[in-house]
Image 1 (cartoon, rainbow, N blue to C red):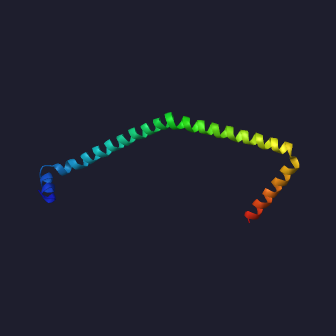
Image 2: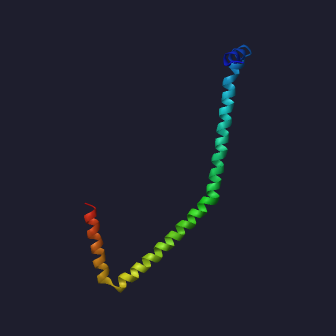
Image 3: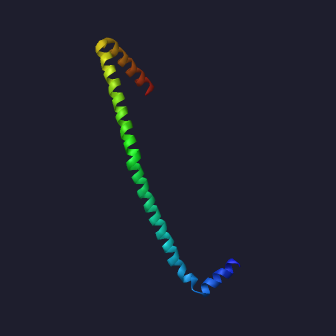
Length: 98
């Protein structure tokens, strides 16, 4: 059967008038499914990703703390060398930044 024949048959039996309601139902159903999927993604994120991110941030902060303590120890041990290195790095960054 051709598309034109189907359209004519639907128009004759009132199918055209039912189409907007059917389209609205499909849209509402799709929106409900999207809302459910969004809730599932949020739940998975909250239960799995957030703890992993928290742990990674904690590990990174601990590593930075350890490195900062090591650097502070070096500065206390060799203050003049530390000043010279800091001045050289500042000078180089200043030259690169121009």
